[in-house]
Image (tube, rainbow, N blue to C red; front, top):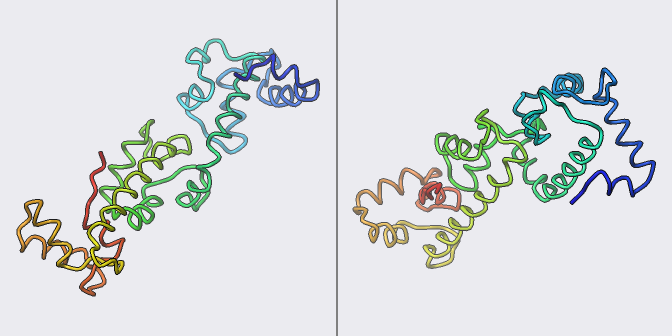
Length: 222
């Protein structure tokens, strides 16, 4: 586990770099970073953070009273660097949604991706975001995105497997007869299958492509 002693062993220059960062937050130079100081410097740098955000970063619920000293700051920055490395594989995927580069994913940003890949409509996308939006601010951060993306991939695999199983002639489309083979066995009437097929055949070509099928298939969130 990363710690102040590990960093100290790396040499004077590394500690100096951490000290420079620490001093930028320690506005009154008392050797302690308070929650108010951290929030003020963050806001000055363009990041408006709530009390809950700061507590989550510093993993110290009593920070409002005690603040953090230099050694604690170094330990926290080391852990943060470790988390950042762990999040690296998800950054490019996150940017597919976060096209405005705000560091979070909104409903409007998630909708076109999930509609294309999972067949989600607006209400289903909103319900999906609510599951993984831990702080209930209506947005998905990079930390929240890890579990969000794992579930997206799981649902994507389910839909792809179903599409390939139903596409008996392997032409890359689902025709009405292939759809009936599946849904009639699940208790749908022939009329209901035809109505559902027509509803999701958006280009009116008499076939369901992958995106149309994803909406037609309506994979459950849980």
